[in-house]
Amino acid sequence: MNQSARLGDPASSTLPFHVAIIMDGSGRWARARGLARAAGHRAGTSAVSRVIQAAPDCGIGTLTLHAFSSNNWGRPGGEVRALFETFEEFLRHQTGAWRASGIRLNVFGRRDRLPERLLAAILAAEAATARGTRLHLRLAIDYSSREALHQAAQALNGPFTAEELSRQLAASAGEPEAPPDVDLLIRTGGELRLSDFMVWECAYAELYFTPRLWPDFTAEDLRAAVREFHARDRRFGRIPESVAV
Ligand code: IPE
Ligand code: IPE
Ligand code: MG
Image 1 (cartoon, protein in one colour):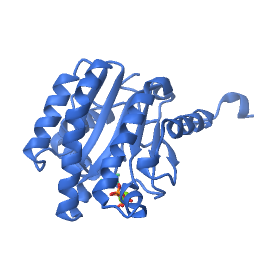
Image 2 (image 1 turned 90 degrees about the vertical axis):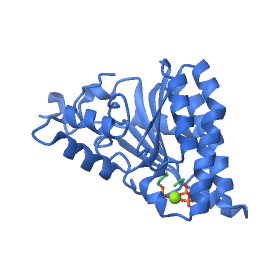
Image 3 (image 1 turned 60 degrees about the vertical axis):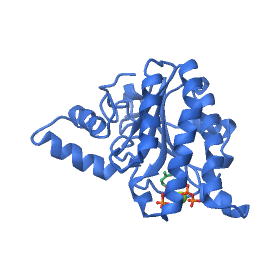
Image 4 (image 1 turned 180 degrees about the vertical axis):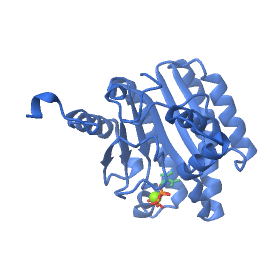
């Protein structure tokens, strides 16, 4: 995919494409079973593995998963700690398999507030998978789209192009390069909002909301979302000459 494609440029909608997922509903999944919310977050890691495994065959080249928003710091300390422990354990457990199957991991968001053990697991996973070319897996941890935009604008400090802003956004969030525009944004858990997630990168994304709670999300659910994406007419504001008469 052309990394410098303009936002809304039809060229950016060719395969392989970029799918982003707001993985929501794990707390409700646990509550429905009489479990602690942390158990829902742990169960959610199985859904993460399922979508990562299914993604390449769906034509997905970049898969971005929202794991922890900066506003999630507003949750009870015990839940935040459980989330970070879950992330750390998951990363350590998956790194070898990702490396073997050509998956490259990059985590984006603030790193200065993360526990040292989690940060070490992130750095180790990123280094071990750096040569992967089959799927670019991006994980948002302590991420706020508004904060990223604000920081990038401050860093650019003067006139800048859209491409420069995209690159600076990635750099400010600790990423080596700007991701392609998001083609399809999926949100599980039934809420109909973006919750401060990648608002610049999703400017022309197709939005797909499902009531399915994240731990229940399957490879078939991903395929259904991708099928619907391909059935949509992405016009990018244009109409062809043939229908303009
Ligand atoms: C999403 O699930 C995971 C995070 C926000 C970390 P939630 O924890 O928000 O689950 P619900 O929305 O309360 O069910
Ligand atoms: C969004 O879910 C963040 C993640 C899925 C990581 P939230 O549950 O935090 O969002 P709100 O509170 O419904 O907006
Ligand atoms: Mg939620």
